[in-house]
Length: 117
Image (cartoon, rainbow, N blue to C red):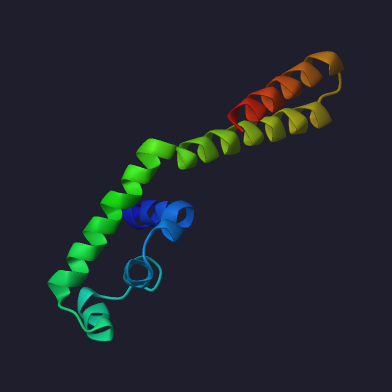
């Protein structure tokens, strides 16, 4: 299951860099949960051909991530925003609040996000 999620994420970020033919086959595997045989019949190629294309796409998409690191940056920014949300919730729920300390922490997280962009 985790592999499918990772493939979907890689495809979401880098799928447009694949050829139309590769995208059709990869979407069939990742999003439509079709078998190699179903895709092979639909595309008029062998099951081995489908398998090879999927493996090649996996490798290509992984290489894009190694070079561009867009998913890693996305995850880091998402984590920082979640930390800001947590600080905001803590601020709302606290009675004796050091407003300046919370504001500094939130500004620091915002600065970290801006540095990532």
